[in-house]
Length: 455
Image (cartoon, helix red, strand yellow):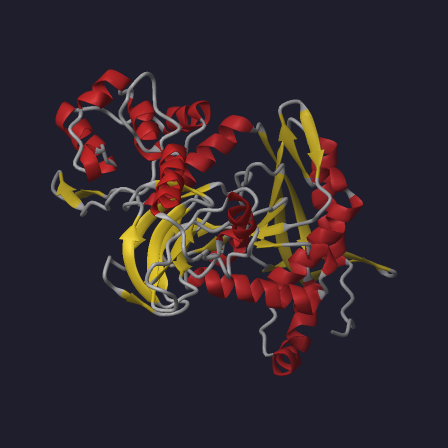
């Protein structure tokens, strides 16, 4: 029988590792082509890993909650498409090609015949050596990156870690073993800031998902609800952003009457022609992209004392998930799309976000973020910067208000559709003049919208 090696696929330029959160198949289970085998989580998004071959899962190389590097083998699948003596042989050059493959086709399987047992053993030993390359302190015991990260965050030294009895394979210490030890010894969890700092100092990921605890009623009605994995990551990311960037927020009120009237005029014909509903979001996206081209120093990030001016304009759009958590899928090269293209991209990302079908690359590479707080009826907000970006724009609810309009016959008061814009920016690299000018530029484009525009 042929044996195929499933590797952890590439998941975007900024993603180097993932946590296994659930195996959907167990050894002995049959697998169909493109059937999902396991669920993984990165610091950006959860995703499934499908199989490109049909067969039977014969070995899982990692357990739930293990942290795995991109390109590492994670499972062995047996198929019936080759000779009985066919074995797996790792090939580094081919593995690099696998890592360059798209996430839609994450697995490249290698199968060669007539390989002797010695060559196979040498190769598997090399793989084990690669997995065991990072051991904390002087310990001869293996610890996964997740366990080491948890130990660092809880202040557990190497000698104490060595004393914990492991329940994993070959006596390895698992995440649950560390959690049990913490609960037994009465350790207290550090603040989000110290947790983030420990993660950064060690170069390790923050704590992954713990098993969700049932809500516990205390004090005659209060409940303690354990954060899920995504909420923990969001919390750490928000605290890190405020800790990293001095936030300043500038506000502008814009008259968007022309846009409201234009959308009302074209929305039905647009939906019939394109099969898509046009919302205000793609309109805001188009305007923001224009303003970024006019003032490109808003489209930057910071690396120490270096300012990195981004060539591409990749606009993230904050989206609320059914769980109540937040995710920011990204429209790549938004300035190169027309309004129809932006509408289709916005709707596609929003729909897949609601169904938890986003891929890791969908949330990678953003250079600027737009959040629509008006969706919840809020008139304005002071959003937190989505690191490592330098600015984020919030658009509020559109409200009818009396406003003064200048005409050739003098000033008059009329009912207009008004909206607040609020731009939060990193004051290390964006001064008030640039931040204020940018949000004003966006408002100017909105107010100058051509009501007779065809689409």
